[in-house]
Length: 170
Image (spheres, rainbow, N blue to C red):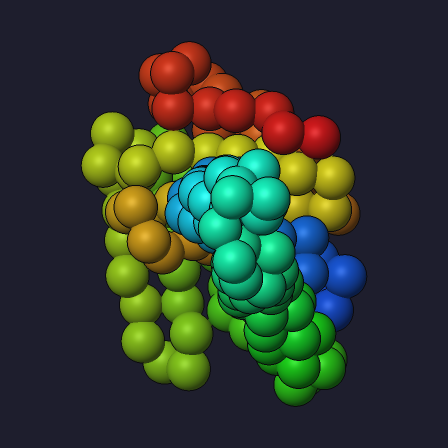
């Protein structure tokens, strides 16, 4: 097999999926920002209410409610997110999810008789995690390469993608 060609039957295990899901949602898409801003805003309102407790009747109660809502809703959001990731990781099978082929021209993916190909310059980006390499076909869709092929995949991608589209996040 030529050095610049890599074909990998991809099996995604639970640990790899969890790492990818947390990375994609919380680090890459920064979905933690809105719940954090919500919590900060309601905490500030609660502190304001607590500061007025000697002058306004019921200010302590209002502060407690604002604090509970401000911290409770983000906690429910993150709890729900991590439970759904855990549930999805348990549902993963042990079979081959898809086959990825990296060539000089680009990336080809084949799954259940269907195939798609992406040129290197059309890829959105590549991220290296501890357990896999993620090649983003666009802003929302990632192709995962397992740890066993990560070194070769990263080397091939580094030779063809601009440095601004590659990030080592280990």
